[in-house]
Amino acid sequence: MSITGFDWNAIALTASIWVLPVLFAITLHEAAHGWVAWRLGDDTARVLGRISINPLRHIDPVGTVLIPAVLLFGSGGRMMFGFAKPVPVDFSRLRKPRRDMVLVAAAGPGSNILLAVISALLIHVSVLFDTDIERWILHNLVNSVWINLLLAVFNMLPLPPLDGGRIAVGLLPPNLARQLVRIERAGMIIILTALFLLPWISGKIGFDLNIFQWLIGEPTAYLMGLVFSLTGVR
Image 1: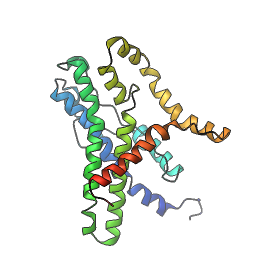
Image 2: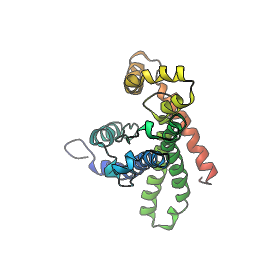
Image 3: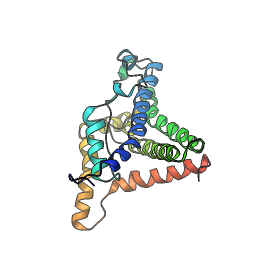
């Protein structure tokens, strides 16, 4: 522990096993949105260079770097929240806007589930490396499974502007869809309130109001166990 009160070796280790999984997860998620939109008629993301595996094209300095770093280190690795620059999609240019909106929105969480499965399979390959490298790779891959499944579950919440909200808008009858669209501006406020304010209130009143643990944490843990089981990871 240094005189500043920070264990910089521990911080560096924590960063080294989280940065790559997070960057891969958000990059593939955003690129998938743009690629599917392009294939369905809207080339906005392609023209702007957003169908790319280069993380720099998707990073938001505050949402992708600052907020996750503060939460990750402040909580000792127990909490992380962030966001990338949204991929622009002109839904009016899609061939079948209502149907294609669903496909474009689902591409992001779908890509995260795919990457989680691939990461789990690669765990079997990590044993080919030396002990220290194997441990570091293993941490990265396990974290990749977790963060990708977490992103998939979180983004599938049926609340605009999340992907699940856009899927719901595309699937609901027009009258209900229009009502759901109206709350999009307040959607992020609702999310941040549930994510940060309710747990704080829970600590004050001694009653569990952490609905994100029920809606996201537990489903993510279940899916993680399922992915490990299906890929033969013990």
